[in-house]
Amino acid sequence: MSGHYFHQDLVVAQKIFEAQPRRHVDVGSRIDGFVAHVATFRPIEIMDIRVVKSKVPNISFLQGDLIKPSDIRSDSLSCLHTIEHFGLGRYGDPVDPQGHLKGFENLIQMLEKGGTLYISFPISSDERVEFNAHRVFNPLSILGWKASESVSLKDFAYVDDYGDVHKDTSPQVAADEKLIYGCGTYTFEKI
Image (cartoon, rainbow, N blue to C red; front, side):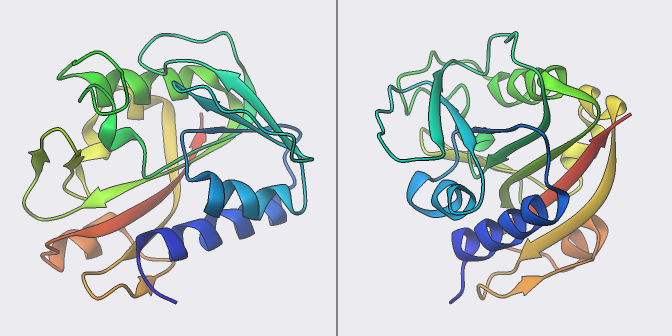
């Protein structure tokens, strides 16, 4: 009971359960983990660049590429352990060095004012690209992305190098820990 996916999936599913949003849309998160958790207590729409077929109650599918703007609007969005892949071509998407920034900007555009975005990705003190697998970001980097001007950080949790979760903390605390390969889970509200 440790690791990135185990903790992020539980942390965010619990937050959605507590918030009871009108509509929840997920972009690319793990279907057999996070999406399954949420589908046990509410409908969830999943957006993915790949075709996903499901007859599971509470799960519906929207095909889309988040590097391109979307007309979807929601009061609650999640994108867990996904944005680090955008633009690297691993999942059939075109190579785009700015893919993660475009994806984040489009997530913010999809979010209604006052809505909540749950986003997670690998974090480390050594920001890097492990091509074509994923990017690893400094825990503070997302706060400097242009689109972050439209959101306010409401909560932060992270999984450390040992697979243990640290809740109700800050990206600065995670940055000070000098992680090699952790996972940051951010909760933003659109302002």
